Image (cartoon, rainbow, N blue to C red; front, side):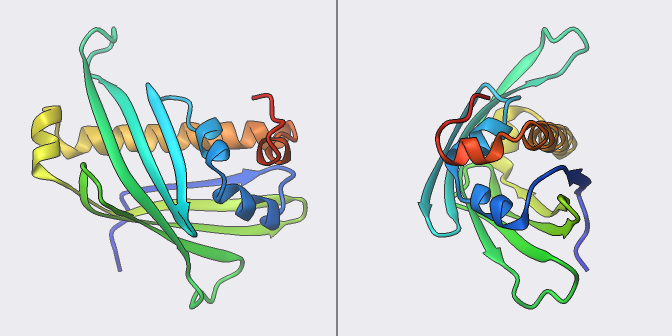
Length: 177
């Protein structure tokens, strides 16, 4: 069984499985949920494939004075796991063509509970390229910590958008974030 590097579980209010699955394919949805980075550019390039171009500043001290900029460019691939026997659905995410990771994998589980959606996101593999760590001057623990922080913020933003009924608006291009 793969090691779990990051695992987050959350209930998203007032969103259906169908609407959530549509959102997963929508560039604007991702860019609205990811707010803690210096630059976020997400572009759908095929079914289950998105190109991500991200820039973050990793803060190394409590005052925020020492910052290291990190740029990540990669394809995020998503495939439904049709062999999943549990309740709800499971998608497997992997990365390709990444300047940061030689391999990365994660899972997204979700199921409807009344009017809400219960989700679990986990990162099960993250093999960072040695050159990426050298350029950033960081260890893997710092990168994993920032990844977890960004994933938590992304889910918090998703909960807020769903609670305000904004997901459908974003998908139809009328969302005021």
